[in-house]
Length: 107
Length: 119
Image 1 (tube, rainbow over the protein chains, first blue to last red):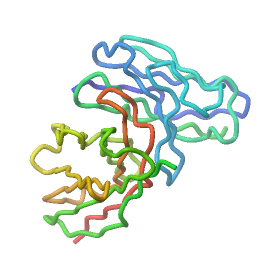
Image 2 (image 1 turned 45 degrees about the vertical axis):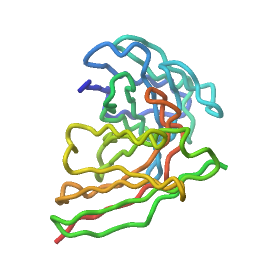
Image 3 (image 1 turned 120 degrees about the vertical axis):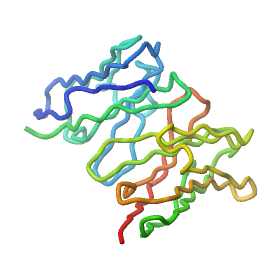
């Protein structure tokens, strides 16, 4: 299986901060990388697909980049509603895998 | 609107099986794959497998091979995930989520079903 490693596992930030989360694959996955946001007690929500494409309805402060093995999710200016967990996930292989998640907390 | 509605919470004893349902509405059922994802308390997301209702094909994560079965009922647009030989470590929230193809992201999720395994 392809292993997905996210970092950091958690971070503290303030409203207005620029936040960057990274995700590394154990082998090349081209651009088959998706990002999800999850709030406590809720189902995940798709934010970014194909590494850099913004899902419809997602604010433009979210962006994704990368290809191959290294990927980044950036929130340009953190808003109160962005405090949540973020998960990367690869859809390159026939068996999918997620990163371990990153929890974004209020500083 | 597009919706995936899952069955209610379950409490099971170790060694038992659980069958979770996911009823789809608002779209053509057979045009989408359905994935199942598990999340243990305080943990990350874990992909369990997928089913293609159009062809009846399935693909399971190695970890769950032999314990998981994914099925569907076209007449009711309902998918099912059955997990057998339950142990306490299987206590989790289980989600269904649809995807347009085998490489597309999961764009609509069910609300989740909590399964508690306890003696």
